[in-house]
Length: 151
Image (cartoon, rainbow, N blue to C red; front, side, top):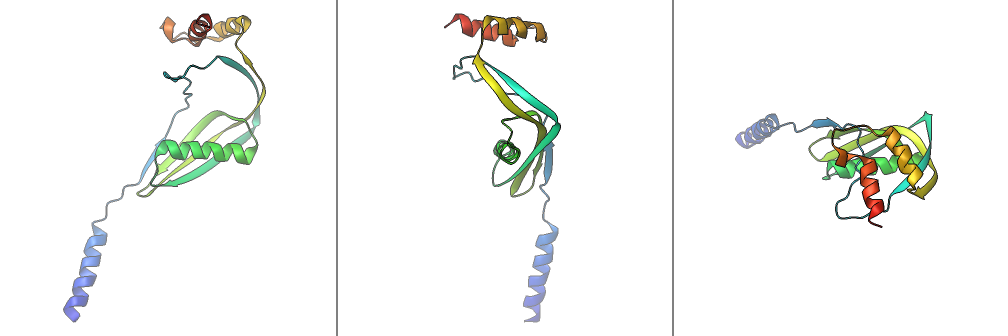
């Protein structure tokens, strides 16, 4: 009986000392995914009131989930608890452990004032603020013009 107890205790110690820590932490950069190749979206222009004095945050933990799922739930949590329509300049902090993914998002409070379809004068305004990327096809204005001419 003493041998059995010693074997059980020894086996438990041996198994627990061989455990591998699989914790990781990921922080993403700010990004906006605005292109869907299989979906045609009529171009819209939104006017948003941004309150830079009102920081909003949201957190979500997903068991056996993935990073994108946790980030989406964190955004939803931030919007629901703050009453905002949109998170301006979102920054994500993601922690991955063995069984869970926890994401926290922070940004500024944004409320939609108006949303309209793109007009020619809107495209002219966008051209003024366009950041040159070296590729003419990559600009937002050129993509909107191309969509507008196919209507």
